[in-house]
Length: 269
Image 1: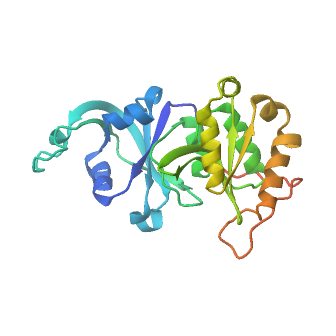
Image 2 (image 1 turned 90 degrees about the vertical axis):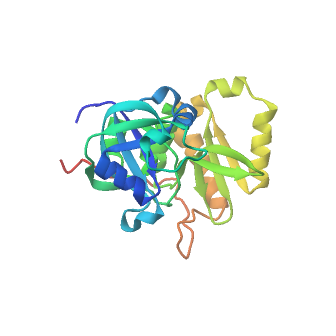
Image 3 (image 1 turned 60 degrees about the vertical axis):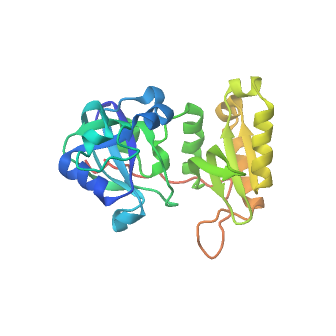
């Protein structure tokens, strides 16, 4: 398939909203949330839905997608005219008018059953995704490192949000080990020329909470992926007891091992 426009991965966390999407062909997003999380990735041409625990066998995965026909600004009272007036009645939403739902040939899974908010991505990444982490589209540096981590079967969560001392931090990559947690950051050149006390506070807060922080520059990712980045990541993982995959024994990483290619969603077409 060719590129068919931007795709938004959105959350479905209750069955009533799923019924609206399926039977009435629309989905709502608070305008404030769209401005905060999506910015220049708005509006989407396609939307897909990440379902949470309440959906049983379809939980923690993307199973459905569809094309966005129209986007309208509306008030909540217009969406739910039979709802009694309340403090949300005058809240503004984007109402996405949708084509009927289509089911993916194979779900896009979250291995660690994570919670997401929104993931703006491309059509290419969407149709080739085997898991949630394949969808992120924030940085070519992150994409390069993610491809190498996957190839070497190093499990990581991209764009993981963690809360430390009532402060939320977005991690480029999170690796969960038996004795520690690892935050891996792919810092562009601008980060190194604009380091502030805030960056140091972030690192110190994460370290105090049991995170080991690794940072790699543009040059290191582009020119020293294996000799420096992967070597440091695997050594840190193994020193932290190996990756915790919910099994009896944590798995150590062989720095010389290569992984196999994983089939994409639409490889069967």
